[in-house]
Length: 384
Image (cartoon, rainbow, N blue to C red; front, top):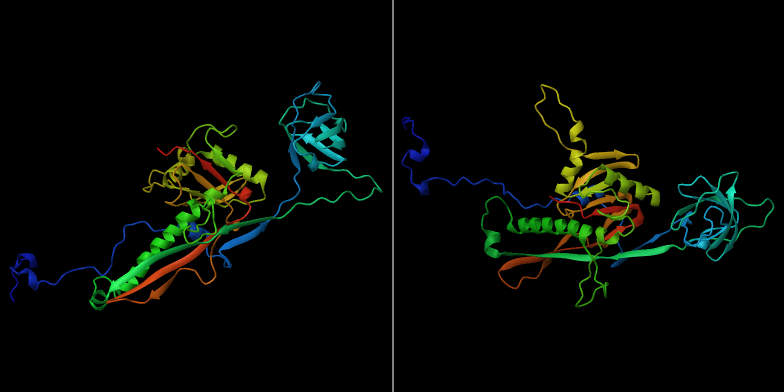
């Protein structure tokens, strides 16, 4: 046929004679990424019961606080009340936080300490209610009998497993017919539902809660896992709290305050900071004003992926499922998402009652979060 210079669409060809041009790829716009699960990685073991448990322990505390506001002479009183007298022993050197004075404990009566003021030549200073006392260490007498044994009790903690399910059903006709963009409709539906379940798993790991009654579940009560946010209570800070840096915007002062509190309260090593999109932009702005660019630079970079401070090197993880008013600080070595043995996500074919193939995607998982004092959370941050 002679060349006419006309495009195909203008050559008079009727629609039935033109082959359809449909891409073999199916585009998915819905978000399904799971950055937190990816950062935590696969667990080293499985849960073996619907109530997964672990043991936690801690050393004997070496801090307490004054619980006495009835001083007659705060700089000379040799007797005062503390919150927990059982934490002290005769012979302990103690020091009030922020004070240069040393004291030596010479007597203990319930929660009342008798001390030598101005020990080791230091100058007595005023005592005040609620001041923190550091126990420096005990000085034993030479040749003395052994002290009374002291110990801590291990704590048994646990979390329940939660079942995640999704049904898949494809008609015999759809199974037999050729499909655009895929080879097998049943496999495609499995992949779609699996993406949804993994997305929901991350969301639940972050924000889920367990029933207040019958948490083990029953025929009428759905068993659910307790998420990270619900687990935390010790290092939880709200904007406006006494002592917390002022303002509602996330800034370096707030991040460093939380990292320092975790460092002081535990031997945890925070290595993940989990935030949503808005708070990630706030973290990026930490060094915006100090960035410089050359005259020939054509790329503007405004992103922080790792935050390094005196209290640890933290990877910044952005997830859509984190509450937008919050920033979460995790020691990833103490966090695991575990499947119940033999119950990681899998497809279970079910008997068909007609001209269709059907089955169910099932997975049962729980969260193991050890030593909640090793983690932290900021809430009530501004989101606009």
